[in-house]
Amino acid sequence: MLDVSEVRAGYGAINVLWDASLQFAPGRLTAIIGPNGAGKTTLLRAIMGLLPVTAGSIRLDGARIDGTATWRMPDLGVAMIPEGRMIFRDMTVEENLVMGAFPKAQRPHVKSRLEAAYAMFPRLAERRRQLAGSLSGGEAQMVAMARGLMPDPRILIVDEPSLGLAPIVVTELFAVLARLKAEGRTIVLVEQNTAQALAVADHVYLLQGGRVVLSQPAADVELDALHARYFAV
Image (cartoon, rainbow, N blue to C red; front, side):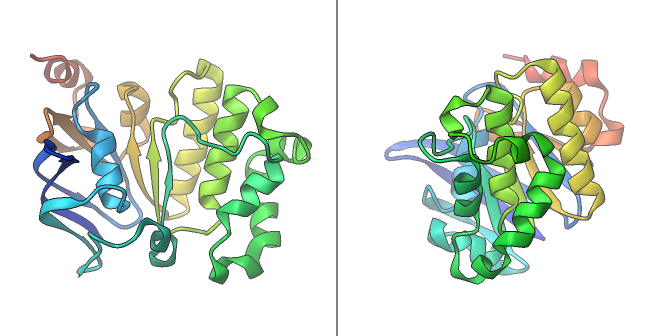
């Protein structure tokens, strides 16, 4: 269980999250939605140790992890696929994937993890020797997702995977997320495509102004009512 309890975090003197509390159950896909500036990415950065937590706590299986160095998060079984892909453009597809297994404990498993990545994304197998900077947006997102899976994380955090992609690619990526959930992986998903998020999620949180304003099982969420709250001023 990943537990975020009454967390405040932000950038210097600017606080973004206000006493945010969320729980991410094992083997479930939890979607976090909300308008731009709601604090979604700030929350993910706080979980990953990229931002300091100024109040509250973040716990994994009961042990506090807020303040843990970002580079240590893979050792705890937590990996993040960032917004905007952030792949290494001057490296090949395969070199990008290998970087995902850079932690020392993961290096013996590189070969098997590459095989699993290429089975999940056959297009990447065709382009394994191609520079990542020459890929389409959808292919680059596949690289980012496959790289995030290379350390075989217990918890996979995914930030805006559909951003800027064609609908057919979005459908393909969400099918992968559904498959990963079916395999029992714990997934934290930030997504502005509410219909796609609801279709794959087990639980939904709505953030507005850095606060959690809705926490509900995805099956109980009515899309029109959600949109009314989403766009409320």
